[in-house]
Length: 137
Image (cartoon, rainbow, N blue to C red; front, side, top):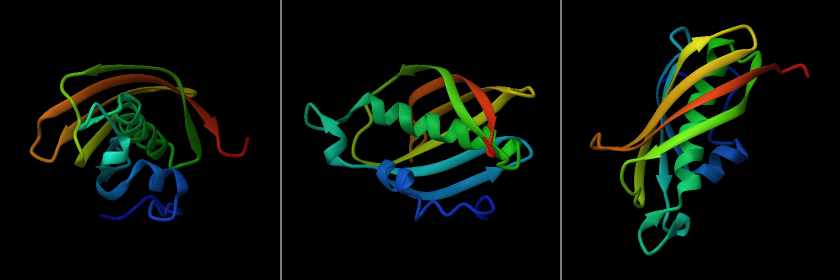
């Protein structure tokens, strides 16, 4: 899967912190992205449950990258708000984050996303309002 031009997630410190595994699918024109992360035991509480901030971060990352792709990565996505509904616990292993743009304006994007297991079971869903800021700023 070709990665966005000029973006090397394997060397990106944030992506390393999030546990980036691979970019599964990316449709810049449609504003859709699917990416895998590794949920690690050190991200867990209560034994085997990934802390909700990591779950939110994975979905937020997918939504932001999907929106940035729609601008050809000329704008960076800054979250104005994010709402997450948690359906089940995330556990250590590979998780799949999907993000897509529902509506794109000149400076604002409305995105949705989800996190699922490799088997397709939904862990959480989210929606976000993003301010699209010029990379030159």
